[in-house]
Length: 214
Image 1 (cartoon, one colour):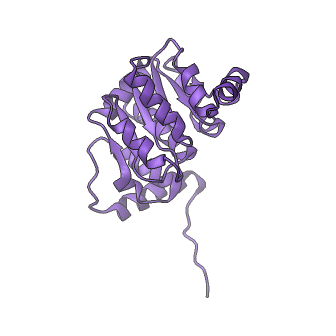
Image 2 (cartoon, rainbow, N blue to C red; image 1 turned 90 degrees about the vertical axis):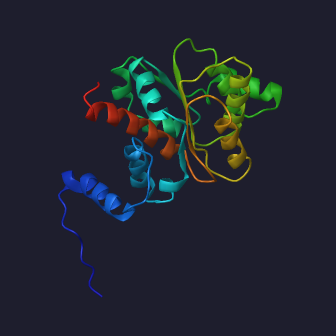
């Protein structure tokens, strides 16, 4: 059997990929204004389930874009997500990307309290004095702690991206975030990951660039 490869120039691969995604989505209904995020998640994962399981609170995208323009920083729960976010694009607006998972004080708190580093890292993030976007792609305990901090009035995120992947408490932690009044983008169910968390952040940054709102 002879395999035929599609002839695409290197600089055209991404555009061609999005053409394929758009075609295969067909008439799949997407919330207006969320299409670039959904398509980029599919592009990152080759998983069309994101067209159905990505949930957006009302006005989440516009609120997220406004937060970035206001200089919001992004807090992640993995070094992988931190590495994947376009930091130069975020820095243009005055924001930074943080991941406290490897910090000695976070490790010490986690050991003392018998909790995960992800939970302890959210406590440290709550002390930051700037607008915050949380991009959680791995640890449901981070989402649960965020929910608690929000309910206690100790933190007021401009957006929570809740896309941890896995089995234990993953689904429930996402549902908790969706019960708050905080703007959210959540991948309902078990799917997600650090790559998806970074992807959503980058999609928002690309949207600002493409709209000329940089």
